[in-house]
Picture 1 (tube, rainbow, N blue to C red):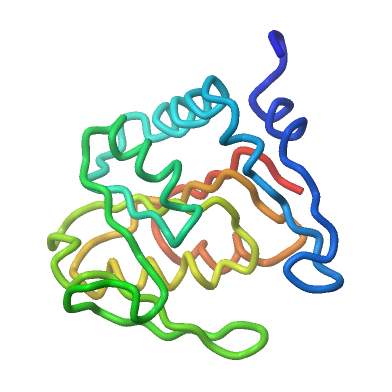
Picture 2 (cartoon, rainbow, N blue to C red; picture 1 turned 135 degrees about the horizontal axis):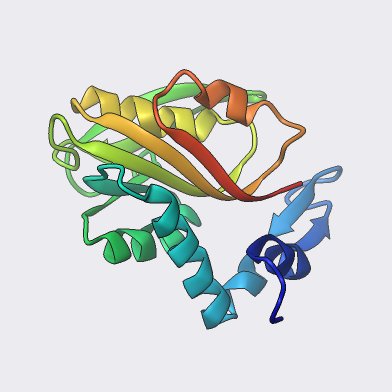
Length: 179
């Protein structure tokens, strides 16, 4: 794979799975990326480089694929890793945020002591589609007095309005590959 850009490498291994999780959906499967340790390191290194001189006090990963690179990035940056999960999955007291989906609504939760007031928190998930889940994570950060430092994604579905939905929050929006 030498000589190829990270984008080329990711485009070469992320596979399409038609009709998953339901008919008409073309799922972007990142599991082949996870089978390549060198590629995973390159992804994390690229994310860390993009943080640059920006102050990041924590990385927040969104359930569940956001935990993978989010945790690795937090370790690389030597900052805490915070998780956001679907309702009822966290064992301690939580803040909840309900948000609209195109087919109803969903609730995300975060432990009440996960973010310190004034922290700059970088939100990470594997995929940016409509932006609803990432926006909900940002709202949970704000509920605890934190600030959104930005949003980092492995994949972006550029034909959906996710980026536009996140523009109202401060910080950069980065995706390594777009479809």
